[in-house]
Structures are given as structure tokens and as C-alpha cells.
Length: 238
Image 1 (cartoon, one colour):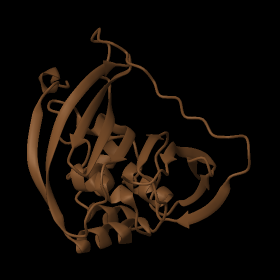
Image 2 (tube, helix red, strand yellow):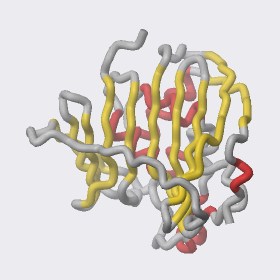
Image 3 (spheres, one colour):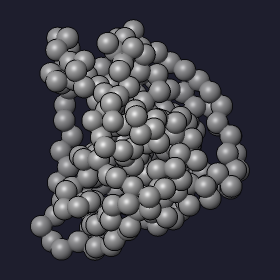
């Protein structure tokens, strides 16, 4: 069972990066993006630190990013991670963690199936809606080794490379990182803030249908199923 003593825990680490790290990320998602800041701050993956949880039952639910300054090509920063909340969603627990640095703040929500019903607050649910107007549509065919490429950015979750682990989690084979799907979806876009919800898994080899609206909303499908929905803020970085 998830250890609730992680609530409020604060950790600090120094993150160092180079232009080469940004290129590894670009190769993993098909293009450059400010979303590189997410794996940079959340090194190892959003699931790290969920002490006591059955990791085969952990799914990445939501992700946000807010850029404070443009990341330099090479640099280092102190990153402070805080476990902000543990919400009771009935069928599971939703653990919300925040990573902060001078350059960016990220927030991830991880859903731990089977660990709900502990009597905690349910928490608010962000609504994601898209306009009725026609979006700009593009397609991206993921490769069979797409998850292995994304693993090079530092995400060590075995859900994305260990077939036995993935089967214990209920999948026929390793699934693609939600953050990889997100990176593919927002590649080439210039933004200062994003919020996204992962709604279904993607398998390496799936073709993605990506929809963007001028007002910042986006949505991604694989095999006719919505797998991602969110919004971007395209205001200029201060």
C-alpha cells in the first residue's frame, strides 16, 4: 500500500544539462520543444518516490509545466521536489508532486490503482475542453523502439521497457511513456505553460493523430481513441 508519510516530503537536487541532452530529447519526441524541461526536472520519471505503492498499478494521470525563463543551452539548477497532495479517488489514490527551479515548475499527478478509500479529500478535477472549430491536424507514426528512445531522457519506469512488468500491469507489452506522447504532440510549438491529461495508453508503433487549435487547446488520438488532451499558453516568456 502507498505510504502516506510521503505527503509534504521535500527533496532538493542539482540538475545539470547540456545542448546534447536537449538533442536526445528532440530525437525521442521528433523535434525540439520547451517540454524538455519536464524530464529535466523530473529526472527518473514522475513515479519515483511513491513509497509502498505497487508500481504495476501506477499510471501517469496529468502533467503541467510553467516556464519562468528560457532554459540556456548548458546549465544547472537546484530542483526542489514536494509531494503536495494525496487525494482519495475511491478506486485509487492520486498523488500530486511539484518540481520547482528558477527556470521552470512542473507538476505531475500519478494515479495508484487500488489505494483509494482511505477517507481523504477527493480534490478538484480540471476540465479540458476543445473548441467546436476545425483544428490543425498532423500525424506522427511512432516507432517500435520509441519508448526505448524516450528512456534515454532518464525515465526509468519499467512499464515502458520490461515486458513481464507491463504484463503484470495488464498490458500485452510495454507501453509508450505518456510524456513521450506529450512531447510528440507539442513538438515545434512555442509556449510558456501547458496542462495535459493522459486518457489512454499508446503502444510503440501506433500512429498518432494530433489536433491543435490557435487558442492553445490540443488533443491526440491513437487507433481512434483519445489518448491525450490539454492546453498551451503561447504568451512570450518574460
